[in-house]
Structure formats: structure tokens, C-alpha cells
Amino acid sequence: MTQLEKATHATVLILALVASASLAQRQILPRIAAMRGSAGQVTPIRSVGGRVVIPDGARREEMNVVLVLRSDCPYCRASMAFYKRIGDLSRVSGSRLAVHVASTEDSDSIRGYLSKEGVSVDSVFSASMASLGVTGTPTILLANSTGVIKDEYVGMLTGSQEEQLLARLSRRTAVSATATGKDSYR
Image (cartoon, rainbow, N blue to C red; front, side):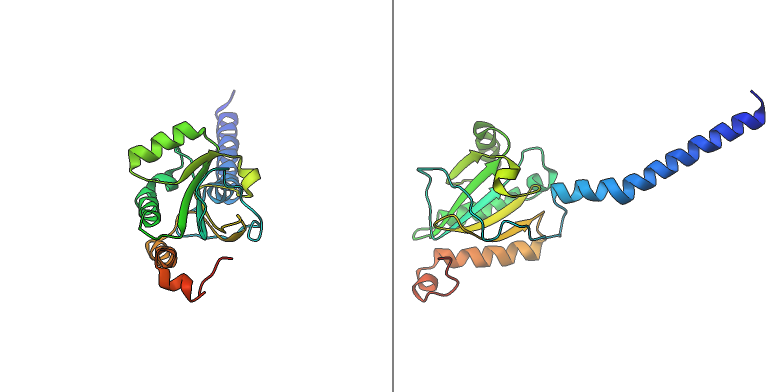
């Protein structure tokens, strides 16, 4: 093989690698990020108005938060302090808020993971992403007492989005907010 042939082969190989990297950057990586959720992006998905099945025997309240998580999701791990704050809200006396976790992983594994992170929830259940109507983790579903999904958040929330959601959920812990019928989830 001559020097010219070697140079030609090397050039073709480099161009193929550059083209592959470009394709991955433009086509594949954005799809992976969308499936896992991206920091700061909150994208509504099709399930608003649908139903989420909260397990029989689980505590149901006027508002139910369903956290769709995976222990290997980096955005879920980064949001654990936020999820702990949501769990703490449901423990306030007189709270009309229940928190549930759904995962594609087995319930015992997720319970152990949440316990290690100090996150208390009302129930943990296993479900497929398709059965929940979600495309990635983390996803937060807000459902009324009958399981009708009223709102959802896909992806890791920013600090200000977390504070807005916590303020919204905090209204479920105050008797006066529901007595006036404001922000009702029925």
C-alpha cells in the first residue's frame, strides 16, 4: 500500500467518524436526553386528563403526587432533596396531599433507595413507563382523589420551578385553601 493510499484510507476513516459524531449529536443524544428528562426543561406529555392507578390500600388524598423515578437516573438522584421536601409536606397534620412513587424497578429496591435518601412516601409501586403514559424519568404527576391526572412535569425542575411546585403543594396542607374551594382538584 502506498503512502497516498494510506492517507486516503485515513482521511475516509476520519470523515466517517466525524459524520457519525455529528449524527449522534444532532439525532441520537437529544432523544436520549428527552427520554431521561433534561435539567430545566418541563415538557407536558399526553397523559393529562388520563388516570394513574394508585395501588389499592394506599392513602389517597385530595391531591396525589406520583413521582416516577429510577435509582439509576442522574436527574432523579439530583432531585432527592426536593422529593424529600414533597414527602415532608404530606406528613403535615391536616395535609390533603399524598405522595406515591412509581418505578420500573421492583418496589423493594425503590423503597430501600428512598429510605437511604430520607424520602418518605405513602406508597411505592412498580409500573411500566407505558402504563403510566410517561416517556422518561423523572416525571411528576399530580392527580386528584380519583386518580385523574391534572398536571405533570417531565424532567428535572430548576430551583424556581421546584419552589413554585412546593408552594402549590403547600396549599394542600392548609385547611383554609380547600375550604374556599380555590385550586380544587376535584
